[in-house]
Image (cartoon, rainbow, N blue to C red; front, side, top):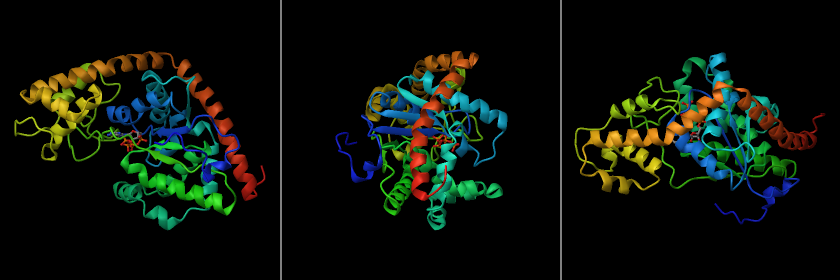
Length: 346
Ligand code: AQP
């Protein structure tokens, strides 16, 4: 990502240009977080906190697009903040907040709804997938989910948003809305860029390597949770789907093994070919034991810090509250500007 880029015309709308670029990312508390969420998001937050002005948080408003149990949603919302802190993000360096505690998200989403095209929303791949998956609860929020996501990002004048391939279309939609608003009124929103990590791997389900490891998977053996105990991690890896070829190779035809090699490479911070070199004479069971040990070694300190934080929730509650206040100060500034331009009294 080009860090040296000068203020573009799109960014001139920001009243006070931040010294560092703003990075933004939220995680949905729609289940207990998996190591997919850790490797795909939280681990990079730790690095980003020193490079960007970061806003990281919990997308609990997004989570209710699917029916949630209220008590679980409350618990998981705080837990997501605890995972982020346990992994090494410092509240002094990054603003950590829960989306519903900053009402500006819902307020800006409503305004952005008024410039969003239903046709464009209906064509979103994720909407089409979710409409199929949740045919029994096809609520309007599933359709307008990208509008809320646009509001999230635009409120903070975000320059970069780390996105996986599945979120690229939504970010494109956010950019469209920002450009539409900026040209209809006057420069107001920074038009965000996707931040893609070349080395980031998509971690796949341990039971079906053709689908993503997902926290809402009904099969608990398909994922490893950040809060899983060492024995559970080792057991799930031992039972992960591989193949009967008994040949240690990194190729799509052996998707289960490929996924485990990717996992090893992500934790060891090396290339998959290095993993193949190291284990090509080993049987799968030996490799799986080494992988289980490696995951435990990396995750156990995080799990212990997480448990300590959740044992007395006061600290995490204070971090979320302070974070929400800090986030709100920035968000309010953007929203006031929007209201003024649209002609809404405040
Ligand atoms: N399997 C994965 N591999 C790599 N990255 C992943 N992420 C999620 N799963 C993987 C990344 O985690 C961040 C937060 O994701 P999210 O919770 O906002 O939504 P999601 O991508 O839909 O995650 P899940 O676990 O699949 O949730 P559910 O089951 O609720 O839909 C994102 O940066 C995502 O890329």
